[in-house]
Length: 416
Ligand code: AMP
Image (cartoon, rainbow, N blue to C red; front, side, top):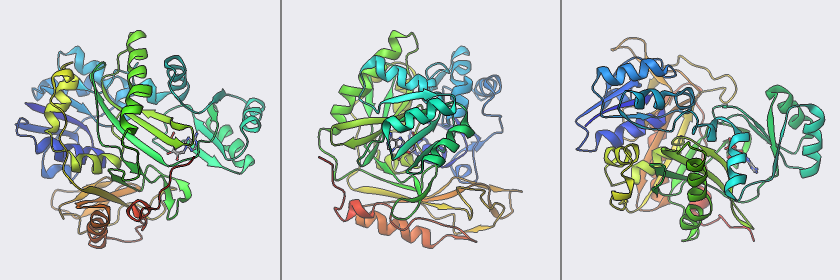
């Protein structure tokens, strides 16, 4: 089959590697892709948030399947436009992508579906925000209601900072703080049937020991040695299937990747957020362990035949990815620096470009590369991932040194 992959970050590089490794994928085109993806796919230019342009490209290249990586094209209606051309799309409709695009909508669906989540209020003015903050008490959680590329959430003990973030955003969701280790569970679904991938954990804060501001994610690992054996079954039963049923009931079935962000609290798993696409950088570790062909899996979801898909097969061992970020990230990252050592297998490109085909590889964003490795256990995978980081040259770059460390050392404990 011919596959068009939309996007050009680390998640899409990981998806491209998975798709290119599937023998049923005879041609892979990525738009716009990036220099890492160029190693396994043909690159085309497109404005990824322009539904008509993406659909036209899908027709032009004769795509049998379009895989939409980032959230912005989904919210813009790219999957709808591709389906309108009679081409299978992996990714939800614009209506269904509101599970990510609007925190208020996601809370409405969760409430209607009886999904366990944090209590919350949607607030639009300082008085309402202050009342909500005071009801829940610190730590305060304030979320931008719209898409914010994973950076719209402030968790703080500082009431003034919480109020200031709310004022910056306009419309926010204020919610109770959920205490407990976090889990990212990716679920591939055709709207009705659903297959969970391995649970993973990512690291949101910029600094070691979970200090400093939130980022898009500084690293990840899978699977989770500390999670209970029935965690995934429980989340599928209490959260995923009720949510999918509620979306069908509303006439907007969710097709694609439902990302369930959870906190494992003393009262059990609670949803922190839904996303409508693969998470970055958890995708890098989850797909590194997936043995089943990725193209066949995503095609089955996109064509409503997931119920007939064989059970997923996984490689033994663990995977770890460590993000190499530019100086200044997550504030204003320094860009345009030359990068060396990015050709090693396992280096995933997130924010890289070349000005001309033979020119040097340059940094273009906050998260530049993800050093991704597998190993017999987390300790071995960590060692291999950090060896990859050591081989990368990028002036002023930063990375966390403690990705997967607590889990590898058996130091993650569940509350309660
Ligand atoms: P989100 O963009 O919703 O994933 O939030 C980013 C990060 O903020 C999450 O990964 C959590 O670490 C944190 N967070 C969000 N909501 C809550 C909450 N209700 N309780 C505790 N932490 C939260």
